[in-house]
Length: 353
Image (cartoon, rainbow, N blue to C red; front, side):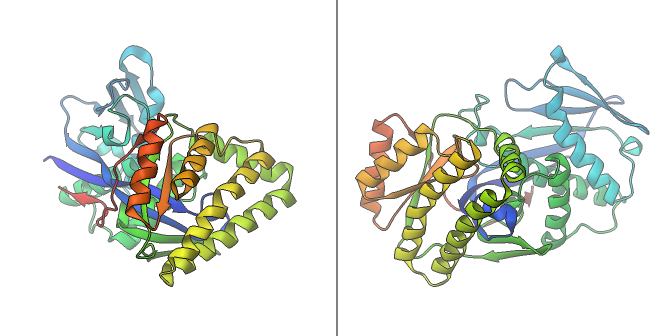
């Protein structure tokens, strides 16, 4: 039996870093996706393959004492940790040992989230989309083979996948990208007092946005580690900066609920300077030179700009009330050497095919 699951990528519109401390974040699923295909494997080993050119086939053998990996060319064995952890976690919830399953060939297609499948990521949440797609496909496989009585609905699946994401990321990250991949659409996401809140939202009606790639990939993990070090080193300073971001996040969410375009753009206008200040305090290049240049281009074109995600590179967002101003600013950005990334909000989340 062949099973494929597809999960959308994401853009964080507001709330980076503050969401880690219980503030709301606004995230949108977008129309680029990760696809994971499960099919029977020949022989006694599982096979992990990718459509990205630099990731060789991994031959995986499950035994009672864990996962054994044999990677062609002797490199990139770290990339098998993510699917391996997902499989162990999903099977653990189902009370199934992977070693008792017939071997599967797992093919991961995430080229849509990279620059022309070159291995340079855009920063659209590929790891989270892989987790959601693979977990969904594997649960369906376990159910179809009689090893799982019932597949969880989205509300239960997102909680399980948030736990899996924490296992993969060593507890780092907010899980906002897991929610986007699960539910789709535009969401207000918040984890406060150990309670998860996921609410559909929309930008104010008059607001339009476009996505620009800085040309440089960034490591979300390294930025999260740096932020954790900042909190440990200077807890009062950390708390002060996060409180400011939290206030902006809450104002942005209220602007969406009130359909107040001016208030939303004012929040975005203040967001990038607040991230500059946070980066200086934490000694992290959150607003890189490219992000700073794009913010200047946005001002000249009558738009406002912010990095999307942890910063340092990846993509940023242009917001405006005028389609013409947005298009003009996007052209100015491209003339300056920055690449537009055509993205639209995707209304559905993970899908089985």
